[in-house]
Image (cartoon, rainbow, N blue to C red; front, side):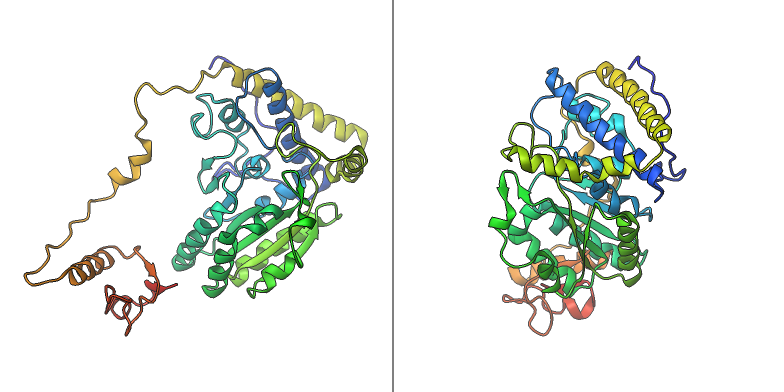
Length: 393
């Protein structure tokens, strides 16, 4: 790339490069405005034919997107996001160029241009476009973090439309049973693509968290102390090392994707009038607000230049980086079946060997525990030999 980037307009944590976003109005507005301006740049790139496919912006929901992620300050904290992920990703990473070029399908993208808008992976940040798809993975990650005892937490972001997915309720149940350090965050913007969720959700949203015994909160992102209260909730989940369920009332200014906004003019005007980021900006002295916006725009001008200069993502040979971990992990040598062993006994022996050879390995399934040992006795004796690592689900 021939273009030169200027320094980002925000301080970063020296240990991991994450943005440091204070609770002062000036700091919150500065980063929220950067998120909004970045997404507006992406939409402009799309109009110029430089972005293929689709993209889902969080314009109008910037403070909602920032609130939880900015409060996650442990290096092992995990952020699991969804299709509307840009605000979460930027708050976690500060990698504006990596996001813009990823969505443009360029080599400088955070995933080399392969993941696009919905599928990002960066340190302990992962997003996926499948409704509720990351929640099950999150429970596994939280289970592992709890076993490690390092007091990190998992935050899983979903929209109110995901409340119709069965996977979510399975994961709420497991998080509650296993008392995992996991915060489920429902970004409740009242609409799932073009369908109002008031027409699809029976009962209360918070009641879904309470039904599983989770600590439950409901906040609105236009409240004056919103980000400070969210930070307290994140700290509470970390201190308790127990699951929580946070509902954030928010509204998106733009369409679900790009051209699918069927809301009438009056509703969109009301959402624009509510806009918490705009109100936060107006609370600042005009010279301060203007300086923030000019600083962000100058930075994004350099981002645009660098992104356009980045070559398109192409693979001359099939990528092998997904196998990198496998090549670092020693191959497991399984014991040979003993004479006279049947299939059940051979499988039991192989499972025992795995559990004995690597303390990180867990075995999960239905009714695995002793004295039952599974419907076909394949796991007989294992929960006794490896307490806490053979788990009946």
